[in-house]
Image (cartoon, rainbow over all chains, first blue to last red; front, side, top):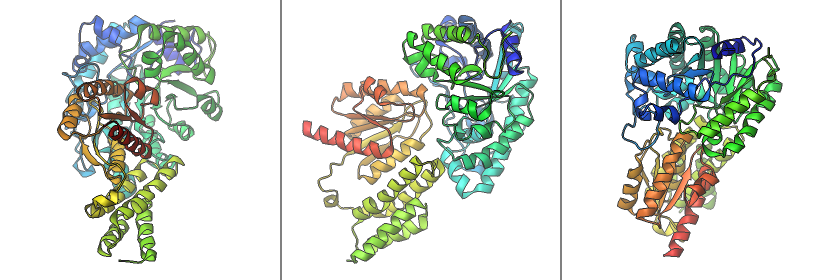
Length: 345
Length: 223
């Protein structure tokens, strides 16, 4: 079974040969960056570097999919907030948004933002990946969810306090964010990404209450997912045990959670028919621990009831080669048996 | 000088004002403390800080979340800004207080956690040099040398920026081995802090200040 076919069948809950090994978030590794003789800071502004580093990482380790972009600043940058790429910093740093708007009413969304900043870089990277992978590899795209996008554009403290002090203003702003997210996600789907992840990562219950989630996050996510084609995935990191059932009402084809989620419990709550993805700590598992300790971590994800083992976040690019190899090997071998929602051929 | 009954009334107003994030109530009570000649330090510790302790409990019990925490902090600062100029050195008494350099490390623009810790240092009477967020590593070293602070507190919200902490610890220890370094933030564990050579690790805001006071005491004993 070719990687792309495996991923496509997986999201339709059709039997596959073994568990697919991929992610909805960045899987670029230093091994690919080093092979290309470039620096991580250079990768984000070049379609060629983005595409090649994603594809090379997938080739080196045998992933079924490759995902771009890597940073969360492409949309804020296109809206005029700039980007810090840390080109002079030692080591690896992900780009950040240097200055956010300080009040909701200051936010302006130019109608042609899809053509601004590095948005065209990502578009071209997707095209390169589609053409170079010859339809063998699944190409993934992602967009931040409305609430998280809002937090990338507005000072988070202003947004969070606004929930209490300026509820109507925040609701209206989140509705604008929802339209923005839909526009970007649809655009990537039109460019031909094989699966689309919506990362509403700033909305876990470490930050807001389940009640706020239900009124401020869920309706907007429902709107996003009803506007998108399948396959579409909802990813939330941080604490999600209290909101997993509401996440399942948003209309995504699959739910992705991180290591803070009790997947065994979530599986019980949601039943065997829901695709659950997760939930290992990518930094802890692929960078920090010894390669010999990786297998039990991956096996536990599978034993707890995920349908595909996904990292809880972007891979930290500076992975240990032998840890990623152990991770991929365990997913393939231990994932040979059917998962709760997906059978085997 | 007011009565004990009035003192209790004002402390209660400050405490409840913080918990219920009623800035006006805190402002009114703090002004009354000053005007009626009550002890400002007592009002900070047994009014404002006591309120924040309740907020911490409510947060742990998942009754309060980050939005409430931020609003309670705003209310606390309304009171602190009024009361702080009226705290005398004698009030601080035998409690060792010092200077702290605080900031969120380069590559990390999350500063809510850092601001809560900063607030606790402010409440406890430390002089706080806040470098803000996304702070280049060498800036921590420069600011420590410039201010001769006893403590440098580093925050990282993301695993991906946590690695910068190790370098800052090394750079500061090289220039000035007596500086106490505290690490905090979502991905930081006690083990990481030990591994990076830090002197203290804070699991929560309350714990950060206790750790800081312990560290300063240790440093003063050494000198």
